[in-house]
Length: 127
Image (cartoon, rainbow, N blue to C red; front, side):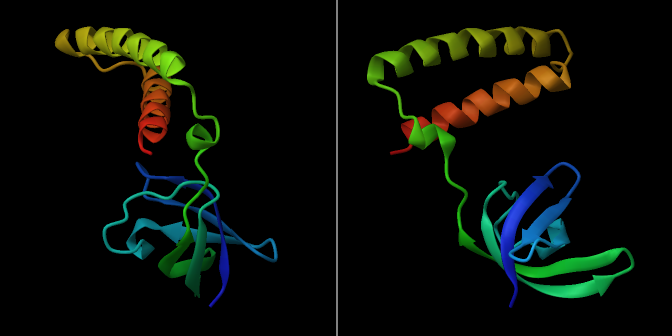
């Protein structure tokens, strides 16, 4: 079975691309993800079957070999820094909450930034 790394994957669109060890790009659809997996992170190592689709090679039945390394874990902060970061995050989430109470979602770019910070904090807390 060929293997490679996730180049990018957009969960909301349900597809992305894998780069094989020899540099080829393989299309991956959400239907190829293993049971219980709903998202792929860039850098994640995978093993997969390949079929030729209308638009080129397509990955089938993925198997995750290695999780992508976490940037947050590599740069773990001391407890005082983490406390300050969480306090700032609470303020940002309060602003998002107020926007939602007014019947609006935050702009997509702002929402992505907040989600990225939430993931980083969660990864840092997950020992």
